[in-house]
Length: 241
Ligand SMILES: Nc1ncnc2c1ncn2[C@@H]1O[C@H](COP(=O)(O)OP(=O)(O)OP(=O)(O)O)[C@@H](O)[C@H]1O
Image (cartoon, rainbow, N blue to C red; front, side, top):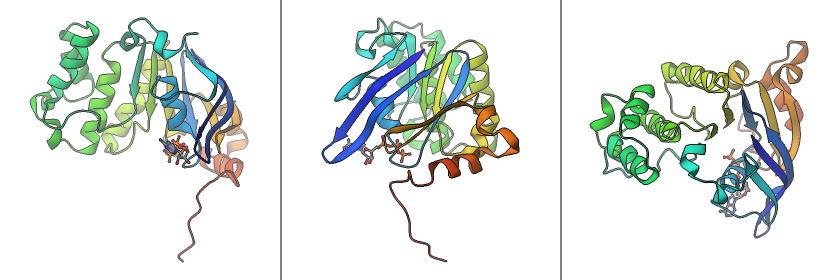
């Protein structure tokens, strides 16, 4: 389970996260949604101990990330598809993480297969497409077989087969009882896979609701979301037509 309580984070004049509280339950796919700049990545970074909050707390299984025993075995995260060194092969990248965390190297081959990179595993990451780098990031997140997954925009760059693949993977991971917390701007995709929604705008909670309630009456997630977040957008573009 993930717990965020009264979390706040300011970057100079910019209040990125502002008194945010919610919990993310195990056994569900929970979508983390909000306009550009709403504070999703900041919340992920704080949950993963990569940034410090000004106040409040962010806990994984009741523990701050920094205090987790063997965090790679407890939490898997995809934050940046470009995290792997371009000069390394995917297999070597995963082997390094596995060795540091005491994970058997057989697991590297298992996650390469699982993410469709079995044959490409011996190629350098610098030659990978964005979709392949996304798959590698997901492979790294799954390496420790963690009960909690934080995935920031995992669908980015995936082709239609990849989009279907990740949809099924997210469902399977949640059905196995894991906590699956995933951000995306692809509302049509989230409508197919999410059980629960955490919606934020300008760093604040706007909705914390089952998908079925949010889309009651046959509304699409996109329509319901746009109606709800009207006014919460920080950046607006001028109409050009
Ligand atoms: N390291 C930083 N330094 C300064 N400002 C930052 C930093 N990280 C984030 N911000 C600002 O904090 C706000 C929240 O950004 P964040 O990346 O968390 O939003 P997001 O919801 O993930 O956005 P997107 O959907 O565009 O990825 C934004 O206004 C952003 O410019």
